[in-house]
Length: 151
Image (cartoon, rainbow, N blue to C red; front, side, top):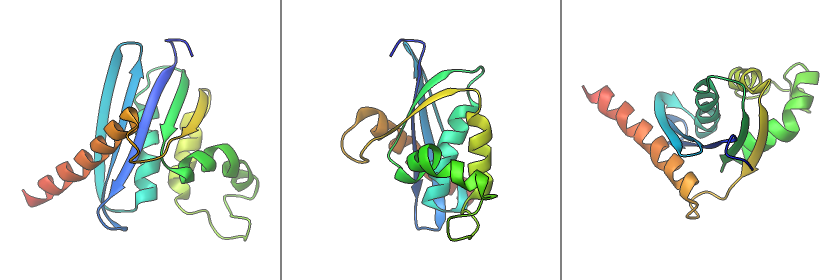
């Protein structure tokens, strides 16, 4: 991989599922890094995993080659295996049910267009530095949200 590849670590967190959730993303290219986080009051872990990648892609100012690292099999397999069939079936699963989180899958699908993306799954909570930072950012997103709710 050359230094022109954007490295993205994305993670989601949820205190209760559903419950207050957060997303975190760490973007780096060469020596430059950008950390982002946010959250929603009533959400699910899968929605926050998707939001982390969505917000990371929104932060990019141009079409890029990107290596995305996620500990979410749901996101990784969704984008590399399942999404093609969902599109063909009108956003329905193989058993004809609506795809869960269709709004976010559609947004992610749209944002991913044009970029060259390599999707990588990493084991969560296994000491992987980039994933640990994204996890900390996701939890920071929840904490900020809860602190704002108390104000």
